Length: 349
Image (cartoon, rainbow, N blue to C red):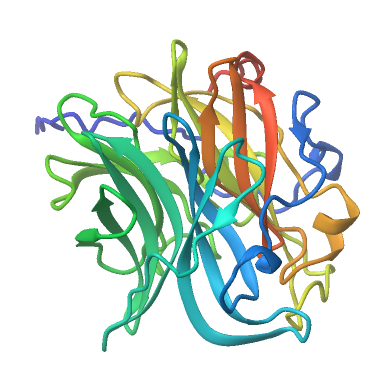
């Protein structure tokens, strides 16, 4: 039998099918090219309305300012209490480090079926901003997409079926279609919590298809649990620079943060995708890019040992500025030269 695959050939990243059972602790060092800003750039203290946790923010740069949409979990940080309400806040900055938060949230989604929207990522394409976000519903977690011109009025384009999340949109069309990375969560997958990065295409941000695997958990040496997309990819002359999050689990970690048990560690990885076929990984750093390595990131916050990239901007001077949620409670920034990030991705598949 001969079958035409219609552009859905096996272009993903493959390795032995079973994910790693253990990881090498010696690999968990932040790459030497990374420079971390010493303090968080946004916390609940900067928010003029009720706030406990401010993290996982999408960031975009306009001509004369930076724009941030951040996840805001309502509650009492000092007493470690959450009210079960999540909205998204809007902030502006002249330099990308000092932020002024608008007096009211900019986005809140709740219906009989939808409980909350969170974890925004922002892409500018076709003269409008496209915001991808996660949606908790009574029937599972979905991925949502909305467009806006001014971050005041939003047009909801689509919500996926469960279980899917961590969607990020490429900043330009590829072969005539919008392209997104995503992380479905199939319950009938391999034994355990092994979730992978996929890619889908759309002509209009509404109808999505041509879905295919990009990177499997088993292909990431520093992961034994799950991976997912991070910030919207950055276009370079060598390929699409993709930041992703990677999780490893150690049952001996015990309690960290607010929860009774927190045995996971979230780190940030980096890979390079083919410019013309972004479903094809052409290189990946075999070690983490950024790990929790200072006292705050290792022991503080709602969940310690948790770094989650949601924004990455290539500045005119060739510096990539990475915005990431730290410990599920605040937003931090790291920087690196774009050529150094690309150089880390020279390991072939």
